Every structure is written in C-alpha cells, then in structure tokens.
Image (cartoon, rainbow, N blue to C red; front, side, top):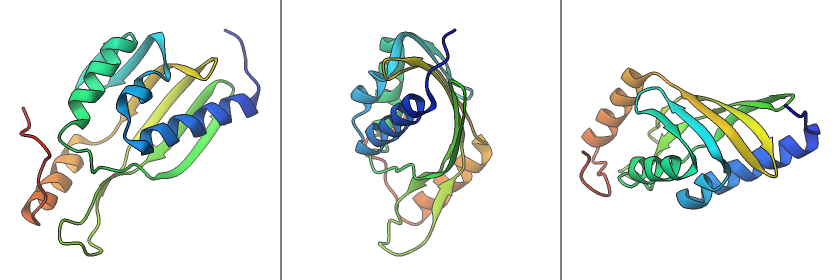
Length: 145
C-alpha cells in the first residue's frame, strides 16, 4: 500500500469531518472508495460504497439533528483515529448534555477517499443516552425500525 503525505491525509480527514457535519450522508458515502468497508460493530459490516450509502442513509434518517463534534484525532501513516462525540440536542432548548463517545478508525486510500472505516462505541451507553433524551422530550424524525 502506498504511503501518502501527512498533509494529504489530514486534508482528506478534515473534509470527511466537514461533510459529515453537513448532514449530507450521500456525499459522505462518496468519500469511501468504491470497494470501501464500513465496520459498525452493532449494525454490521458494509462492503462497497453503495452498501455504505444505503446503511448510513437508513441509520441517520431518524436522527438528522445528531451532531459529531471531534474531541481529538491522530494520524499515523495512512491511518486516522479520531473521537467524534455522538450528540443529541437538548429537547428543552437548555444546556443538558446528551452524548456518548465513539472511536473511529479510517484508512486513507488516496484521491480524498477512505477504504476502511470502523466505529467503536458502547451500545449500552448509547441506549442510555437516547432513553434520557427521549424522556426529556426528544423525538426521532421518523419511526425507528
């Protein structure tokens, strides 16, 4: 595998995060190589850009209000590891925090694309955050399931 310049990997990573922050999940899927793999341990492993696109559109449809502020990131060669918080807004409009942590691993493949994404988080923590959020009045954009 080719090793890319750190500045190229950093630029691609920053673009990846910006597109995710935009909420345009189809554009986000386009940042994965055609043969890319997304490992989401609690939802499955998705092979290929179009499978990734279908999965992310389905996953994000009920929670378009979720944001992903990055706590930190590190780059080693073609690999990026970062910590995006998974944040739901306070349904009461206040300052209550509804978030859980995630570690995401990306493998840069060149041309602004990533060939691997792996997301690691505690599903029990995620469920507890979502339960608290719903109890406070949070509502999904569409029914889950």
